[in-house]
Image (tube, rainbow, N blue to C red; front, side):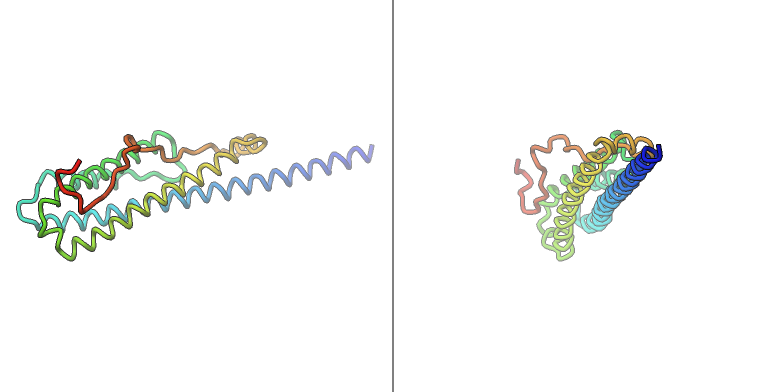
Length: 200
């Protein structure tokens, strides 16, 4: 009888230890996802900040297309208004975030193509500096999105795997959504300041 009770106690201690270890692993990975998401938002914010400077630089060019500038300013306002807390990364909210950032990318691309008609603007030191910063930020965005998706994948694998799916469900750990490929992503949009305005 005593041996049976001792065995039961040992089993409960082992299970409890495994449960604590598993829970701590989920917490650690959840924090990694949140950190990666914060890095994503930081890079997009860096781009939005840079776009403000870019618009001010382009605004100085004589007769620059006003609609193009207005589109960029409106897209920037929308992109900065869509902020998602790391605990709210649902499929719907991620889609909203991606749509807003996609509109910003599209408006920015149209602006850069329009700049081709203004060689004097392209030759300015300020524009050249902003060009280099934009290229760097676009690369950082791509890298931070990949890192975020990698962290989400590790987290989701833990949350969905047995027995963590039971433990995770008890403590409110749910699978998270990562970035989906943008519509038309197979065409891979490029920021190219040297591309002629009439290029396809």
